[in-house]
Image (cartoon, rainbow, N blue to C red; front, side, top):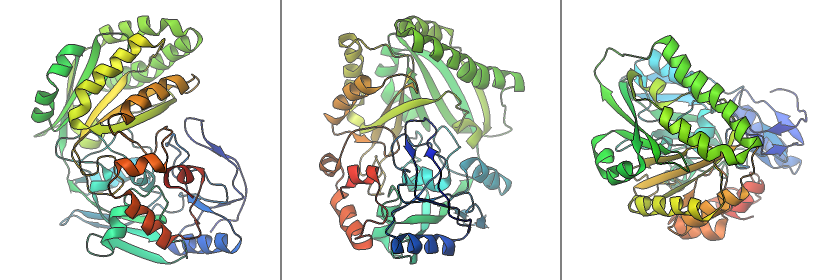
Length: 436
């Protein structure tokens, strides 16, 4: 275990900071347990961070901050069963390479692969899918260090309530030290991206959802323009974009040029409608195929702030129309597209898609731009239809609201009372969402 030290931490977007009393880099589960016991002896709270890709204060550590960089081992790979056990701090991009080497893959992913496996899981990270759900539905077992320093494992057969609660536990029940994933044989995804008019997308949403394994779209505010994305499995061989086309689309246009446009709209917000109109019209259709994780994920170098809500699937179209109407009522000038994704029902207690097919609506602003009025207005709309905020993305909801939208919320709190009565894993964010 590395020597204790103190240093400032901040997240990727720069909107969350902390100066913990102690920073520790454990290399084994036993060292994590020792760090938890040591913190308890000194009256300190404990948080294990990931890579800082949460926009909320989920990773903020006021007492002892545990860095995950010493916990990156691949413990076992069983190609016959597809069960793969890795330690909590392994980054998703490294995990994907390991899986690919063994002819395996995750069934579904979000759109970046920079997070640690535990950080992504604990905030219920998800992608879009008709049949395949988010990370919380792809886990077979967890290893955790509890508040008393004990090490436990849980699964559907062993301590099933802890398993259902801790898969998306926001670090409030214990420190996840290892995850056993249920993977699938490697597969090729064909991506079909196509610009489309707002009215056509909304009128064909049910069709797109039924016909595609993974469907999502982006709407460019202040315009009629959308970009639809349809990903489906195909037989190989893969037909990826050329190196130049990949660089042009995913590095230069989606990051470098987009970043420059954000600088323009930051200085002159009134240009956002014009720039969005140009961007929407400049989009071209493209089709390519590649190993699944290379299609699911893409680089993101432009820093932003994000809010995302999961709403009942049947509320999607009316909510989108109400959201667009808000742009006509408010003096918003938003240069980031709005992302819409879909997910089947999940069974992890605090999954945003728990017990209901869900639609996810994500809004963003450049990280140097004010967000308060925009995020507040959209949040009011989402909560009116029983929306559940993403645990890793900005919101203002508290325990009093969350217990009204999560059927097992009070069961989660009862389990927390049992496992962590002294609130060893408390921080300002868990105090907000779960109470003190």
